[in-house]
Length: 55
Image 1 (tube, rainbow, N blue to C red):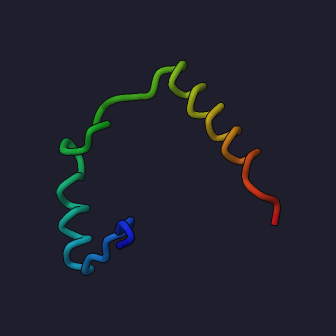
Image 2 (cartoon, one colour; image 1 turned 30 degrees about the vertical axis):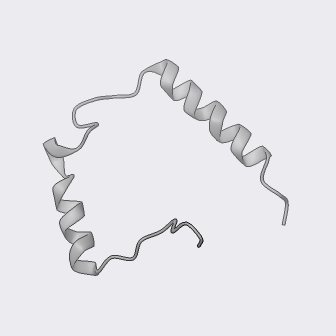
């Protein structure tokens, strides 16, 4: 049996999930990424795009 990697939810459920993480309920609310974190994200994205197969 294959492992399920995605879950289909109704539009109503999607709206509820969106509302549950808005504003002050968001984990990054009133926070900013540090310069170090921004650099690491950038480097990771560069590696990701370099290793994608060319189509």
